[in-house]
Image 1 (cartoon, rainbow, N blue to C red):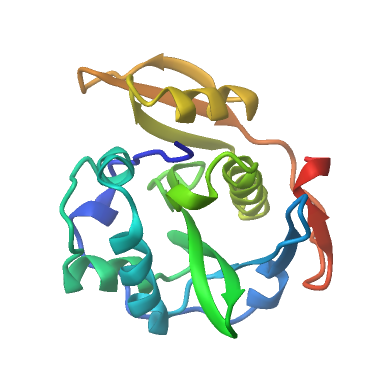
Image 2: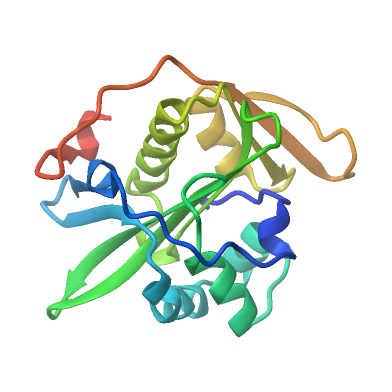
Length: 212
């Protein structure tokens, strides 16, 4: 499954309520699947709490467990608020959406939380079970790395269960180095050295996943 768990303060602490709007247009992208399905990659907004809640409720028990290390069926209002209210400085969060019957449906979530050293960050991604195996997880991870690089970060780090072979394979293909977790048994830590900042793509750009 294209998912990973990052044990950051996202799991336990409230998020900053302020949502930075400046420069957000540069973070919007339009993607296309091989079958022509169009998707949008965009920053999370405070009003997305309901959308995120629907997305999390639709995930399989295994996918929720791999992402959050908990298989709780219903996300709490506090968790939804934490995931939707981000400051886009310390915490960056993005969702992938698809228009279905003229309604926006969320199919993926990707985010990172920067460390105090401002050089590294913990990341996590999750893809709807019905959309896995289509290259979406790898595209999300690449897009997240691009954002982190443009924000001046040098490293991305993710913690994954040893049994989560699909995520470990994704991280390997994406250039992460793997090592045993220094503190948690049964967990693996993947670390990626980021390249210099990527050029910013315009919102109208369409990036076929088959080309990635």
